[in-house]
Amino acid sequence: MTATKGLEGIVAAASSISSIVDGVLTYRGYDIDDLAVNASFEEVAYLLWFGKLPSQAELKQLHEDLSNEAKVPDQVIEQMKLYPKDTNTMAALRSAVSALALYDKEADDMSREANERKAIRLQAKLPTVIAALARIREGQEPVAPLAGLFIAENFLYMLRGEKPDEVSVKALDQALVLHADHELNASTFAARVTVATLSDIYSGVTSAIGALKGPLHGGANEAVMRMLSEIGSMENVEPYIQQKLDNRDKIMGFGHRVYKNGDPRAKHLQKMSRELGEMKGDTTLYEMSVKIDELVNTQKGLRPNVDFYSASVYTQLGINHELFTPIFAISRVSGWTAHILEQYENNRIIRPRAEYVGLTDQKYVSVEQRS
Ligand SMILES: CC(=O)SCCNC(=O)CCNC(=O)[C@H](O)C(C)(C)COP(=O)(O)OP(=O)(O)OC[C@H]1O[C@@H](n2cnc3c(N)ncnc32)[C@H](O)[C@@H]1OP(=O)(O)O
Ligand SMILES: O=C([O-])CC(=O)C(=O)O
Image (cartoon, rainbow, N blue to C red; front, top):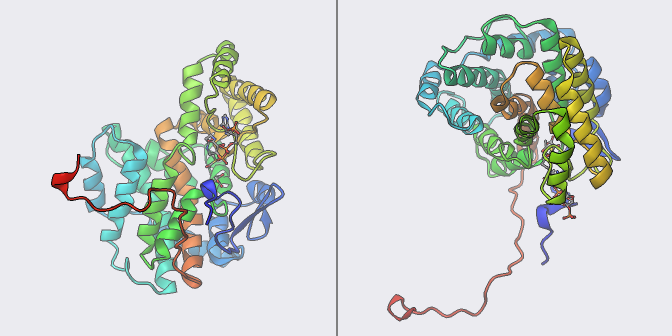
C-alpha cells in the first residue's frame, strides 16, 4: 500500500453535481461561463439541490422558503454576543452553525424531505448569522432579514443596515454563483466524509466550514487582501512579489490542484474587479492585482484561482476582509448541502487506508524501566 500525498488524482466519489473536465467547470452540465452571466444565485442553488433549473413557480417557492427561514433563533444571536470580539470570523461561524442544530427540531430526521428542508434552512440562515457576527463585532445590533429580498441583497442589507445599491447586489450575486460548487474540493470532501457515517447535515456543514477556513482553501481570499494591504501601492508590487518569489514563499490566490491552465472563474471576478474600480473612479486595487498576476504568471507559470480577484471585488464592495471567507461559505453551503444529499442517497462509509511508515517490532517496557 503506497499513499498518494494529498490524494492527488484519486477519484474518491461519483457525483452528478459539478464537473471539471479540461479546465471547464460545469454545474449539472451547465457551463459556469453561461451561469455566471445569466443565472441568479437562487437558481443555481436550486439547480445544485434538485438537478434542474427551477420553473418560475419553483423559483418563487424557493424564494419564499428562503425568506421564511432567514431568521436565526434569538438564542443563537445571544450566544454570538458572548463570543470574543476579536475571534476569527470562520471560527465564530463554525460555532454558530453548530449551535443552529440545537434549535432545529428536525436536526436528526434523516428523511430526504427533512434534509432538503434543512439544506434550504442552512442556506437561508448563514447570511443572517454572518451579517449578525459582523455587526456584533462592530458593537452594533444585528439587523433582522427583510422578507422578500434575495440572498445577496438581504446579506448586504443586514450588514449595512440599509438597502444596498443595485451594482453591489449584482456583483455579490455573481460572486455567489461562481463559488457555489466545485466538485470534490477539500471542504466538500470533509462534508461528505462526515455525513457518510450517517451523521446529520449540520455536522457535515460544520466540518466543511472548518475545512474552508484554512488558507490553502477558502481562507486564501482573506490572505490575498492582507497581501494587497501590505503591498500598499503600485510601486511596491514588484519588489514585494519578487522577494516572495525569491524566498519561494507561497503567493496566496495562485495555483490550483486541478486547474493548471487557469481557473475559469477568475476571469469573471477580474472583470468585476475592473468594473467596480472604474465605477468608483479608483482602479488601484485592480491594477495592483493585475501586476501581481503578470509577475507570478511570468516567473512561476501560476495562474490566479477563484480567491485572487474576489479579494479586490469584496473590498470595493466595502466589505471587511474578515468576512471574505464567510461570504464564500454563504455560497458554498449550497454545494455542500447538495453533496450531502447526494451522499445520503447512495451512502457507504468513507474509510480509506493509510500506508504505515512508523516503527515496527516494538516491545512493551514498564514505565519504571523506561529511560
Ligand atoms: C477555493 C480554493 O480553495 S482555491 C485555492 C486557494 N489557495 C490558495 O490560493 C493558496 C495558495 N496556493 C496553494 O497553496 C496551492 O497552489 C494549492 C493548495 C491551491 C494547491 O496545492 P497543490 O495541488 O498541492 O500544489 P503544489 O503545492 O503541489 O504546487 C506545485 C508547485 O507549485 C508551487 N506553488 C503552488 N502554488 C503556489 C503559490 N500560490 N505560490 C507559490 N508557489 C506555488 C508549489 O510550491 C510547488 O512547487 P515545487 O514543485 O517547486 O514544490
Ligand atoms: O477545488 C478546489 O480544490 C478548491 C476550489 O477551487 C474550490 O473549492 O472552489
